Image: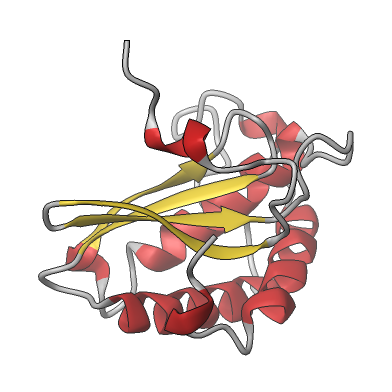
Length: 152
């Protein structure tokens, strides 16, 4: 059986940041790494879930929404994947979009998007302040990120 691409990244040296994970035709996958792997310092379920609701909502309501394929958490609880259509959004544009939405999420006001039993399968662990805090950390981390820094 072939090893999947994400298993070829050396997780013993990987630091928090923004990385180009892979490109499959027109679909680009970014690795949004929030935590250094294998340290025991992981995103909690509420942190992942709350940040995911904020960021997915902001991405899908952005001017670049047609390029957005997917945004969601990694099972290892150290970050997220963002998939986008490279025909509609360049890597540089995707970095700018992520900077924009994480900054907006860090200052998000109002009710948590999708926080009801009809909209979410685990709505009770969503918390807007938790999501803002996690997004504030990542917004600061990537504020000066460039295409040149995307390599693992």
